[in-house]
Image (cartoon, rainbow, N blue to C red; front, side, top):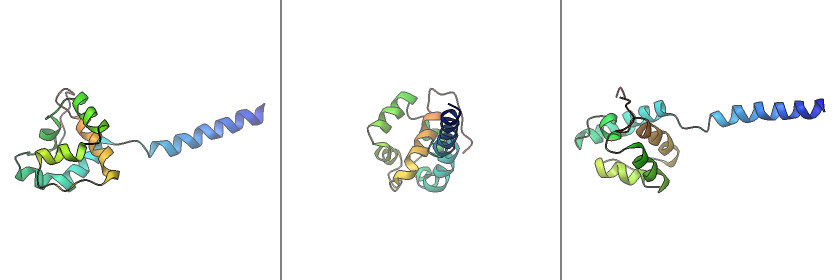
Length: 109
């Protein structure tokens, strides 16, 4: 019984360490916006990430992400933007979702 509980405990600890790196991060999404999109979006009239995020509500950003059209939606507001790599999309989505028009949050970029 002790061996079984020990094995379960070790498995839970191992899973918790590996799964935390898989979560999206809005701070990383903000840094990606600044690095990859800020300049080209400013040329299109989207002054900063907060302006882009406030284009939709959280539910709308969620629907766009589930449909797999996040790059297309960003391109709609920033036509000169290159499509983001798949590995960046979840972080940028998390940023846009956390600072959407109905979130009450204001980013610093």
